[in-house]
Image 1 (spheres, rainbow, N blue to C red):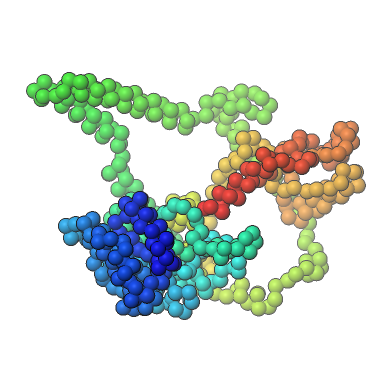
Image 2 (image 1 turned 30 degrees about the vertical axis):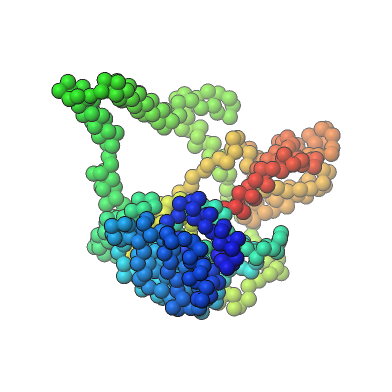
Length: 540
């Protein structure tokens, strides 16, 4: 919050706090000198109290304020790069710990920040949120344009999060919080302002996914008897964890709809009890609501049951299928065609041609065969987005990140066993394929576009080149979902060229990456879907 000495900026801050009914706040990079702090703080009014880290730095980089009659704040620790306070309610009970961070700009200067915060976070068992300007990123998506992010830039932040079972809290607004104010290709944006929370905050406040009982459940499953083979040992413990979660779910949440119905019946009996004094109009309204809820529950159950079945299907010949066996065979046949076919013979690779191309240097080759380290495993886990779908073990990246302190030694051993001894436990080496059509008619998917002049020589040469690629790679084109498109020639010539390469003629325009491709110049309306996608991605 640069420029707090400016009265207009100060007024803007006061208006924001008032309109959003903020009772606890933190201001960063205030640049208010120690001799001016009292004068600036008084301009917020007598309702506000303030804490600053002037004892550690004269730059006034962090300022924490709170409304006197709404909350209480107790200072726990202050340094040049952070302030830690305990936020209490009006009765003096601790609600959560609040860490405000303003990281220094140089990697070496920030190392003490990660060490000090790590020691603090490890020693507490209460909800804690760490917010502020870290002046650092921990994943590639946190920076847009400019120089590529290096491992040295992210390793300290990533290790801090993984080692202490911390996660980034959801946020709203612009995804990138800083830019160099450039334009076009010269604009560099970064996501250096974040809110980080511990497992106690997650379990009670944000999503309810990870609570203390969950961590205890994982630790108990992880204490299961050791098996032969590190990868098998990891797999068995993950399954023991899953069994414990399923058992907890069965005991706590199974038949929830029956429990709700039971409570409704109990409520109805109480309402119909003549010995109890009830308002007649209120009773009637409650009975009507209960009746509607019953009907709604029945409708939902029927709809869900209907959605889980395929009662009718049209095959490629337009025939209506109702027999479940024939429906299953048609679905299997469709996806087998969609996956394509393999070839029995593969043309040998032309090594002389390969050697003429670019090759790795000896130094690059040595890097590729270096032993895998625990730090690389940590970095790989930190780079996995939390929204990624679960794997075959049923756990997504959030599970591994939040329980890393308890399970990482077994994960290290399992991964290193594979790289060191080439051993892979068979249930792990399974691939699940889920095909989700991205268009209304999934029979046309444009994975490869090839362009040529609309004459016989060009079309034939293009077809031969692709056939050579197919023979060498084993990948063949599926004519059932391939088309050839023409522009600027008559229909007779188009038909002759299509017959020449045995491929159906498609109609222009068609969509590729959401944008229509046509023989004519696209107008604004046709380009708008792509513009919207780019804009949405830029805004996060």
